[in-house]
Length: 231
Image 1 (cartoon, one colour):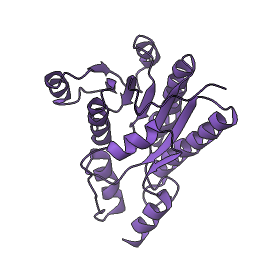
Image 2 (cartoon, rainbow, N blue to C red):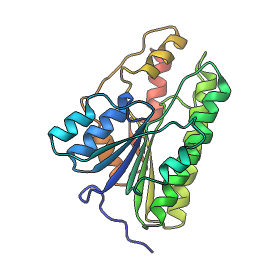
Image 3 (tube, rainbow, N blue to C red):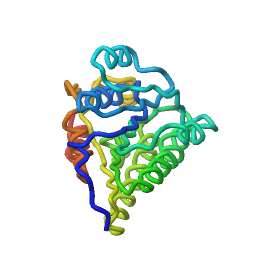
Image 4 (cartoon, one colour):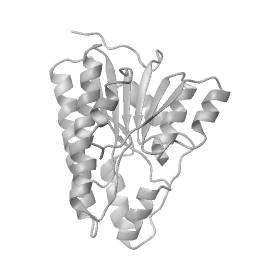
């Protein structure tokens, strides 16, 4: 059985998808402070991060990346294999099929590709950032909840498969605090009420949990869902 390395104390290469979004940026910053070599994957270049990384002599490379593009698999094949992957992509759209395509179909393809690259090295960890209410089906949020719930269930199945196979890979389900972001703003509109936000200073705790291979990281999704229903 492969021995799982202590990735928290042995930084390598990390992919961060959705790197220009709120949680993507926070995750990139934390990894850079931990001296990881970060490959930021996003449609738009993360503002100010390349300059900060250069000034701090940290290793950050931005790779234009869009899960809706047909050639994204070939783009990934040209970047170095990771030891850690943080998937922070999630969209809200009126087009249900587009949400399913990006949040579920292409996201799982991306994660499968990343895991295949890590399996060649017999080591790695994956953190998938998920909506806290993915399985509640709140009024007005059924399509979005369906896409998040599908990814959530897929990740649980994959995490259990890794354990059953005694793999050196791990997959963590990450449930971050609600924070001011474009996605959160869109969801709040659909709920037709203000949503309590708890913007954290860093993603340090979330990243640490993923690197240590924990099953679930961040808030308890069931308690978070209950608080949404009550507020």
